[in-house]
Figure 1 (cartoon, rainbow, N blue to C red):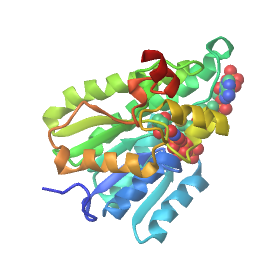
Figure 2 (cartoon, protein in one colour):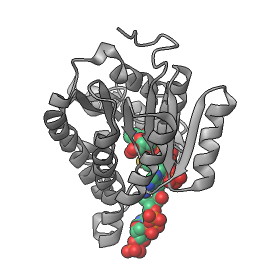
Figure 3 (cartoon, rainbow, N blue to C red):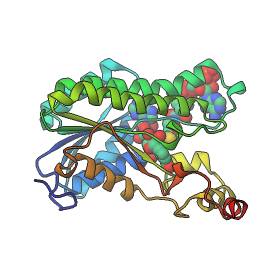
Length: 267
Ligand code: NAP
Ligand code: COA
């Protein structure tokens, strides 16, 4: 049995990560590389994804970076073919490509809504569906990166809330259908994570950041390492009986408002 946090926990494993040029997904890829995995990384921008792969190779790991848009099924399939031919069939697949911006629904064009749903939800279907033919199964682990928005409505994020809610249900449907083939499908729902594009867009001033932290039960942002450790657990043999679940790694975000004001009101 693989022990979760041994430094060689993923030795000899191949992992495909979508949306890996920055942020949380790159953090997962770097953590997995330190645990011994070979990484195939995709994102839209050829320079950004090459630079991301270089961070892993420069640190002594093994990674290839391929430019592909998750909205384009054929491009994802071509990237996976190249990745499988270079690194072998995938033991794990992480689907984390996403887009988000704050906009009131009444000021959102149809294309603005569709763009986020296409990247997040359709992109996750494309990545997981394509990967099914490239997996090392039985034993493969698929993880979609969801968000509290998948369960908790948020003003000015109708597109991201709808997309992440769809991802949560997709996780459960695929877990049922693919379990018999020995493929586990789970999600991770990160709360606000420090030093990410996501939080730069959603809490762009120190005042907003303080308000977000002050409402969390654990009173702080999480780190990319927190999410990467959760992903490592879900890909390890320690999680062999876990499928169809969404692991909240969120400092209590989904529990609701735990601010001092809210606590005072309920006292
Ligand atoms: P990020 O750094 O902007 O990561 C998004 C990644 O997706 C980038 O690598 C981007 O690279 C790629 N991407 C965007 N559109 C794509 C497309 N159409 N095809 C392929 N790749 C695409 O943001 P992040 O904040 O770390 O978020 C990462 C994930 O965590 C997302 O799923 C997000 O919803 C989730 N999340 C984040 C937070 C947070 O606090 N930040 C909280 C909850 C959930 P290119 O531009 O090179 O394509
Ligand atoms: N407010 C309202 N509408 C917006 C917007 C904003 N801040 N940003 C983009 N849109 C609209 C555009 O106007 C366009 O609609 P239109 O054709 O009706 O004018 C539509 O959204 C698509 O925009 P476009 O820039 O063509 O999309 P893209 O595919 O090049 O980029 C985004 C996708 C918009 C999601 C872009 O922000 C992105 O690349 N995000 C990735 C990084 C990210 O969001 N990280 C955080 C992850 S949580």
